[in-house]
Image (tube, rainbow, N blue to C red; front, side, top):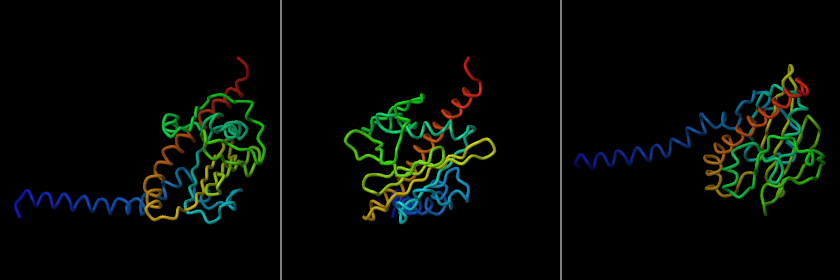
Length: 218
């Protein structure tokens, strides 16, 4: 075997090894941090209203951010989310690549504040909506996908003048092995990118709202 052939074999072996070790490394070292970004151990293990709606979820993520504002300054941004409503405060251009028609507002929209259990939150034109399942103002806001395979819980916990905003997703496991692999290795990291941006977007908006409330009219 000449030097060029040995180099090609070595490169091929390295690629195969990387392809095998990459997923393993993600599962062993990064998956927990990906699914539980910003969350404390007690928040990950806590029971939230809505967990019981999908108790055997294949994937559960609990992502948390500290917001320097009271729950009252955060709640309006949560209940107005959705396509054709307030958006989801993440990368709109990515959402709209999938035809979701998301346009994240920086204003409180009064027409979307009166929310009731059973109300539907659209995720894009022609797509199934999420339905409000739990509504405890300034504490818990839980929505459930129409087919029952996805539950999204927002919980607010006031601590020392700040608020911990918990975003928990409970998603049913897909049946086919290739789909499960794709969801684990591609969708989970992708969801962190989008959800982190969303939480930071809510944080910025809520803190600005709280600051304006403290300062009063100019």
